[in-house]
Amino acid sequence: MPFAQIYMIEGRTEDQKRAVIEKVSAALVEATGAPLANVRVWIQDVPKENWGIAGVSAKDMGR
Image (cartoon, rainbow, N blue to C red; front, top):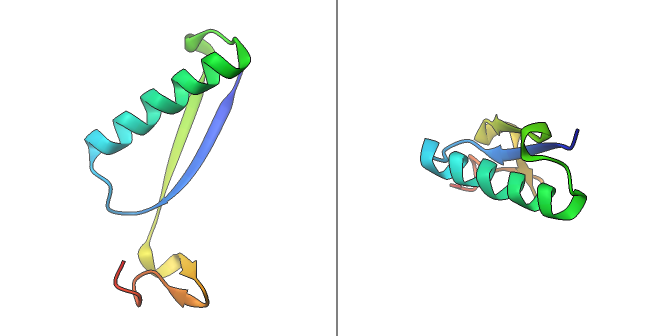
């Protein structure tokens, strides 16, 4: 059972997340030959203050 774990800075819309799930699932089916019903995708929204870029939080960078 292919399982994709995706971490993203919070703020994406439900439609954007739906698109990520659909496209990642399709890519895993294509790459592994696994049935779509066996594919799992987990999106973890990370608060901006918990995401660091070059030593600074994404929140402090205005992301």
